[in-house]
Length: 117
Image (cartoon, rainbow, N blue to C red; front, side, top):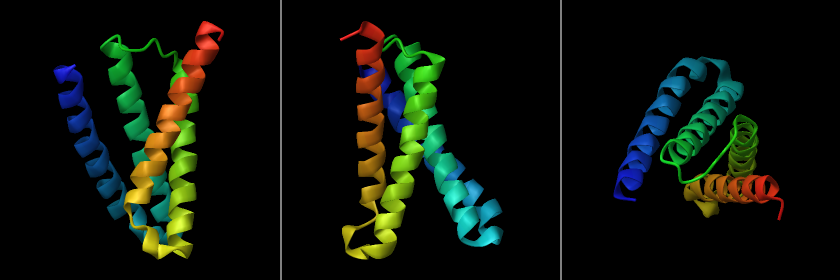
């Protein structure tokens, strides 16, 4: 479990760095670039976190399950970003909250579907 926590922390930092690098390149394209960088960071974070669960045998996620979960995380971050644009008092942490709920709900859905419950 300690190994997983360490890997998850490292993946969070890597995902943030990838998002920042993507933002530098995409920043020239206005808000479309910002959304692309945000989506890429959410996607990479979800894939990395899901693969670490799979590699450490904490979950038997299939490739399609990883795609569903990652897509849900991207959509959730876009919804959170849209909400932040209209309700700035929520704070930037809404991005992480929505991402986390989307990842958790996607994991729950895929595991429930896999085991036929």
